[in-house]
Every structure is written in structure tokens, then in C-alpha cells.
Length: 163
Image (cartoon, rainbow, N blue to C red; front, side):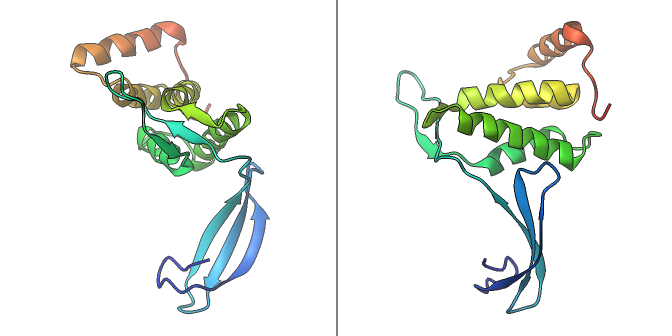
């Protein structure tokens, strides 16, 4: 494993254990070059999944390999400064990844992934859900935001964060 600090090619595993949700192995490593310590995660990948992006005006969408980090980044951004633990975010992202990999399809539309994220955030934190929706659904003006937020309140008085 390449060191993220000095780019040395070799590191030594100092500690290995399952993650909190048992979906990955957490490894503490030490660089043989600079001595820095860092953590890596090893996850099972059932198959290569290709994400089909939405194309514009009748054009075929472009394709790219599924990247868990993109979902992690989106979810983290939506939950920024919200009372949601990193563990809950990891569980959400792992659940979405498992859903995608067990669908049986080699290609998954980005729209389907977006909807999975929306549903997960809806159950996790209403503010994060609205934040994600405002970007994902491309709200054009404040009225769009208002209408969506009021529909969220009407649906079920969603929970906020860790309950």
C-alpha cells in the first residue's frame, strides 16, 4: 500500500479488525519509509458496476465505474453540521453499495443511485434530505425549495439525526 504522506510503496500492517458494521476490514498501517501511520479499509466488491450518467436531449449517457467515494462525499456534504454520526453515514453508504451490487445489473442508472441516496437520507435526517434534494433535483428558485420542504413536513414529521 502506497503511503499517502511520502508515496513510499511499502507499509506494514500494525492492526487489523472488522469495521463497526462488519462490511469491511479496518487496517492500521505504518509506512516503512517515513514511519507515518494511516488507516485503510478493505471491502468486498461483488462485481464491477458501471454507472450510466444521464445524457442530455436524446444523447446516450456516458458510463463510468461505480465509485463509493462519490456517494460518501455527497452524503457527508448533505449531513455537514448535522447530528449524524460517521458510523450512521458509513452504514447508509454501505447499504446503498450493497443494494447496487446485489441488483444483478452490470449497469445502473445514476438516477437510481440518486433515489437510493434520497431514500436513505429521508430516513436518516430531514435537513440532510432536503439539502441533497435541492442539489439532486436542481431547485431553480426558493419556491421549489419551499414546496419540497413543506411536502417533507406533511409526509411524516421526519426524524432529525440520532433518535
